[in-house]
Image (cartoon, rainbow, N blue to C red; front, side):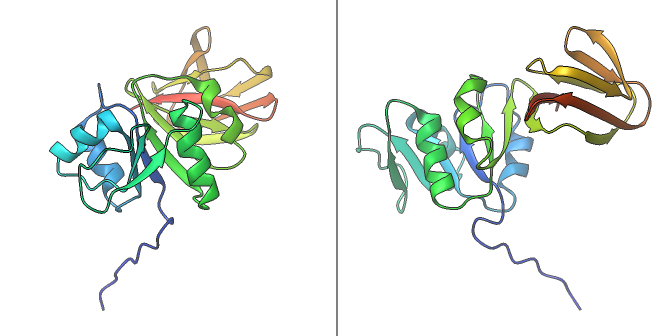
Length: 189
């Protein structure tokens, strides 16, 4: 008896591609493995089309993009690519999105943190939000960076390298506790 996985629409995180500098083809392939909804900006549309990657939506302010057949257009709202994409995703009931970017502006994502699960790939890092009490298993010597400063920070299983940069002390779980609704952390990829 064989097992087949049926991937339902919106079951896998959508993929928002804003930039591909310093991003490996292998990791891009992994993000595309389950055929997510792919949303891109106009400059990224040409690059992904050259790679032969199927694009679902293009964020555009010109309305003239015709890179692939069956590509839908998202009109750019208020000059913000992030709000245009995230308003579409949350309004269409997506529960998660992976963002690949060359320009990290964390405040742009704040209005959407309670509406969609978010993972950002930037500068060889995987960035996501956690809540207090977060724990994860990692091998010894792995780096964890805190991207904002929480109140009453309590760490277990992590050693300080420098301000807001830590490494795992040993193979096993690390735990992060703090006061506040969330914390952005980054792991090397």
